[in-house]
Image (cartoon, rainbow, N blue to C red; front, top):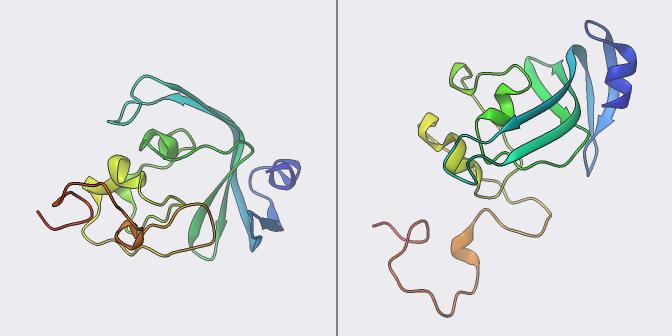
Length: 141
C-alpha cells in the first residue's frame, strides 16, 4: 500500500504484495482510507477500518491492497474501495468460507483453493467428532 500510495493514482507500479508475496506490475487506480459498517448477515453493524488502501489494476484484474488485515465478511468490503461486486464476472477472495455469506448469492460457480494458513476451505476434510449430520456445508441437504 505504501508503494502504491507513494506512486499515486494513475502511476505505473511494480511491487510485491501479500504473504507469500505476489509480484504485481500495473497501474494504481486509486488510493484511499477505507472504512465501513457491515450490512451483511455476519456481524452486521460492526465498524471496519481497512486503513490506507490501494486498488492496483494489473493484467486485466483489480487487486485490493489494505494496510490492515480485514476479513471480507461483507460485500461492503469491496464497495468501500470503489468496486461493486455484482458488476464483476470473477471475484477472488482470500477467505476460507466467510466469503459465502457476503458474496455467495452473486456466484454461479465457486472454485475453492487450499493455500497455506490456519484453515482449509475444504471443511469436509477436517476431523469432526461431535457434529450432528447432515449439516451444511459438509453435506448436501
